[in-house]
Amino acid sequence: MITSASNPRLKLVRRLESRSQRERLGLLVAEGEDLVAAALDAGLEPVEALVDAERPALVERLTGAELVSPALLAELASLPHPPRVLGIFRRADLPRGTDAPVGLALWRVHDPGNVGTLVRAADALGPAFVALSSGSADPAGPKALRAAVGATFRVPLASFEDAPGPRIALVPGAPEPLWAADLPERVTFVLGAERDGLPAGVVAACDAQVAIPVGSASDSLNVAVTGAIALYEHRRRRSA
Image (tube, rainbow, N blue to C red; front, top):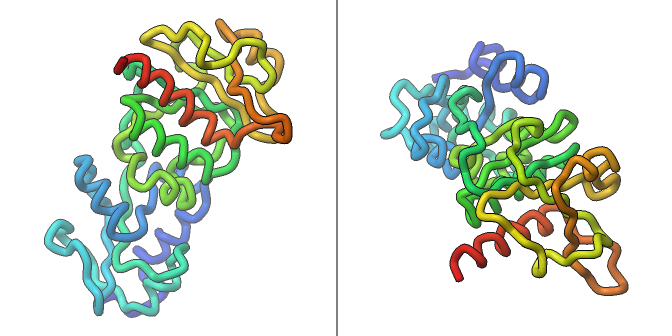
């Protein structure tokens, strides 16, 4: 059982709190039973697994898991309540690609909660991919992983530049509403961060612009809500 804070496995988890270290090492930390189980269900094999020695979880699925004293495991937690299990997985094992018929291309969406929620929406309303530009939050960071509720291990990720056309920019105030727009079977919705939106150059490079009209007292919708509505409308039409 691990009883020392200087144990190399615990040190690795601490290093992976940093995005630069996650990207350099090509690893991520799944915290808690639900996320670890989702990764295992998706076929990912953990590099390391740490389990609470007094409240073990998923040990039957985690060959070679290390028991850790509860106090030390609690020190690693980013959750309000200490997890019973942590799993370290390879980022390269996450699904990649843009083969899904619909996708969300996120331009500098830097809030990890929004990124994770959009990945969750892509899982629920897809199949769909999520493409991220530089400057977007890390989908493999702890807050984004929690917001995605395991969807990160199922939804393909890609770079913003690789998102295929036709591209439709979701822009507040665009003259054409989403419900009246022509939505081809294969389409990428392009969304920007809530404060800054999409720059003119990105909008100009899209094939169309549409809006989701809102009440007069509101300026716009949360970006995660916007993406979910767009995916729902695409799915609704395919199902009609």
